[in-house]
Image (spheres, rainbow, N blue to C red):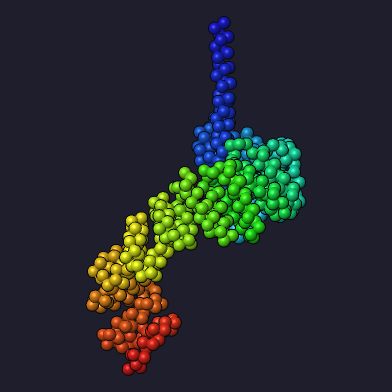
Length: 496
């Protein structure tokens, strides 16, 4: 009895090993389907030895492919496919890697063709081992499309779907094959079938399949079905920027489409008003139709969402809308809110600079200085802004205050000819001509066509009696189209 129990226990332990290994592989597969490729790769690597080692290494190779590491994937999958126990799945994964390698071949057409042919060979070998292996037909279809064999690709993709219609990748490939033959209605149906077939965890694939359907329905003259497909894509992933970029590309081509996009985005907002992107793009579509008031309201709603409050681009868009409405105080608040979220955001920086330009135009250099100092609190290494700040003090003839800011700018960017030229002007104005001359010459060593340096160096040489040198500077600047230098030539006479 005891011996029987011992044998039973041994059997249970032995059976549990492959069961546990399979559970670990399934967990890694779920990570892959969810798009967590790095985590999936790590999970597959833990099973690189022992039970299910081949399947684990195939999974790891597919993760490398998904991460764009084609060379690593190819090396790994070639090794696996040549091992004993490697089945059709390993051959198909290798075919996928060969196809990816071909697509990266660039101008090397011969290498590309060789890789594609080898991929087809691997698919054929997989089908010799298992004639009902749907993935082999799917990958074969992809390779055939890359070779321009679109009719053959349609047959292969159709076979993959016939064998396994519940696989979203098969349906997606069928959509691509139909699209390659301009069969847009059939392509859109296949894309929708793919979106419905993908598991819930594969959010990225579901979203992208709906996007393919939306684009294809739009090309096929079915705007209502396109809008429905977009709505489904939004429902899958409401905070993904790619969705809205695609929406802009598709619907910004004419006013009728812009109005349709607004209606669609309003549907999105009703479903999920806490997502920032729908409000943000509503603002852009309103702007595109000339409705600045509605645009500003949409941008304001965008930055009130939890996501948008931390999003500098949204604050930048609101600042621009406020400037359009001549509400400078609101624009200032929005721009600096955005810089709080991202100190180097280009849109918010540009809007502060626009506010500074308005202050200069209205001769309010005090406000220009205040705004520039605030900007420098966020961007203390911005040499251009330190030079700009120095320039404002220079304009106000506060030369002592201007000097340290020019020095700061020069230290941060010693290769900028404009900063050198600006600093040179200050030194010239404070009777330090030799320092000014050195800086103008340094600016011209960086950019021999820097007109301001040529002209001002010419003035300096004329002032100290170096007329030949002055004439040379004026002639070069005049040849570059500088009218002031052309007029100054008359004051230095002919050459000696």
